[in-house]
Length: 90
Image 1: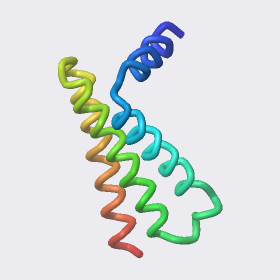
Image 2: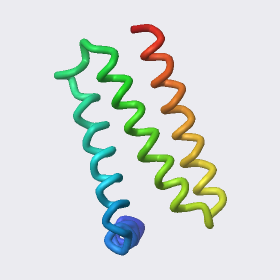
Image 3: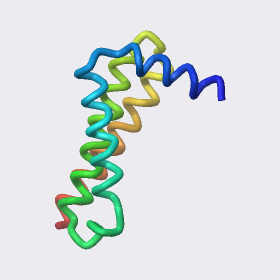
Image 4: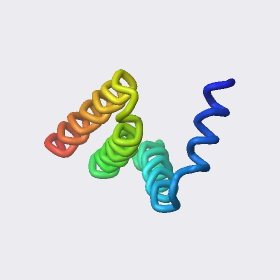
């Protein structure tokens, strides 16, 4: 619970452009990965790409914490690979 409060305080301290970027990418990733869009591979790929942008933004933000940054960038790379794989098979 302490970690969630810390992350919320950090999010509220961020500039407006970062809040908008994070909010849009998170929402688009959730919406495009829903079952409503499951029949179209391009929407699924867009969901993976939005998640990759989300993780890259937080990876850049956490660059002072090296281990956390590496883990977040690794997750972004996995999302990019999944995006590429879903678009290639479409």
